[in-house]
Amino acid sequence: MALLRGVWGVLNSLGKSGADLCAGCGSRLRSPFSFAYVPKWFSSSLSGYPKKPMTSYVRFSKEQLPLFKAQNPDAKNSELIKKIAKLWRELPDSEKKIYEDAYRADWQIYKEEINRIQEQLTPSQMVSLEKEIMQKRLKKKALMKKRVKLKALNENWKNLSNSQKQVYIQLAKDDKIRYYNEMKSWEEQMMEVGREDLIRRSIKYPAKNDPEKF
Image (cartoon, rainbow, N blue to C red; front, side, top):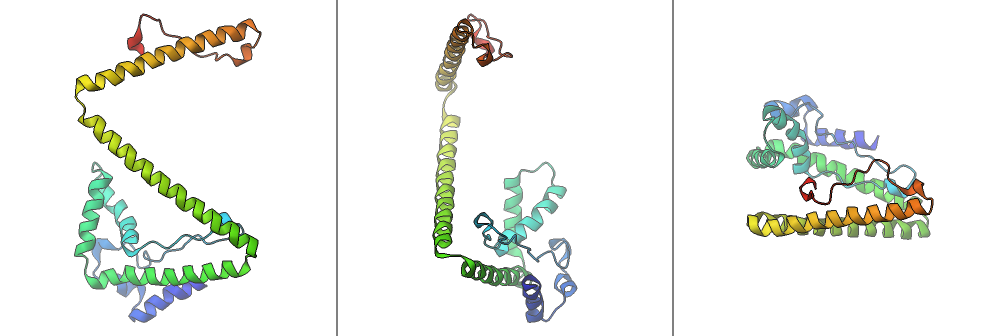
């Protein structure tokens, strides 16, 4: 009911119906109520804590991406996102307002839901919830840092010459040969002590004089 009141409040404030809102929008809006975001609210566990609503631009992008993909099946997502961002910048204020009002309505519902949940939690549950939220934030931050490092490493690898890359490729081949030899030796020891159950049945060891198979 709260969600319906939020959507109805948006329509009331604009003095238009859902159909009126989409008049003249063309392919930009897929349906009169496509802007209505239905969040997955908290149910019975802390892990179901509500997520923040999508921003106006994110909501618009999620609507447009399938349309752009259908029109440009061979294009990369990064290229489509650039086109969507350009379309958003050129979108008339009257159409942007649809998304902005929907975001504000969802944000109000989000705050009300947060307050309702917090009122039902005991002090110990509040502490647990705060810890969980903090851990998720730290995990997300660490993941972002890792992605940045991996991206930098990928760029460094691309900038290496073929001769420089060959050094690392050969080291990787040598490591693989060493791994298989050590694994073979270990499995032979397991057979001697009667632990055949630890041996991998489907492994085929390559010939020592044929490193190119790696």
